[in-house]
Length: 224
Image (tube, rainbow, N blue to C red):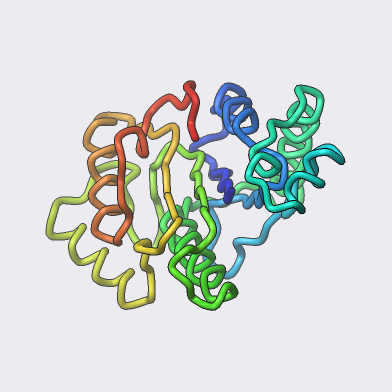
């Protein structure tokens, strides 16, 4: 799981508690969790957490025997609470050290997710059965950067097409086996529905297979 947490100034008062609990609740033993503070340029997107979640000794034995049950073993309530607390501390630590960025640069995070998916598939010999990757962008969706500014107005179709072409020329491709990109908590000062539609269009045109609920305003339900 790639969890990008938007730390831009527009989300200063946003409470991610419900979303964070729901995300952590769906983690399983042997999942790899990578947490990245988003809202920064591509070269500055560095993980604050990159860990393989441990299970019990039984989980490890079952998985080593080649049985899927070992990978799907649910984490204990205590383990989930520890992970949630660790994620919060890591994100807060990054904000304290580096400050909140003036711009969101959310599309850089989306580009990064596609790049991780492609490189991971390559590490496995480029086989079609690439590992499943859930890329979750916990954000209000208000992209504000040198790439595009939707903080005040959602771009029209012509601007969106030009933006997609520009990103594709830079190598952004979300059509990778096993990759699912989602934007959770989308909010706009005047028109949330328009911003939600814009993200769906963007992700689709960049090759993502967007499903219902992949771009949502209030991530309070079972996410994965």
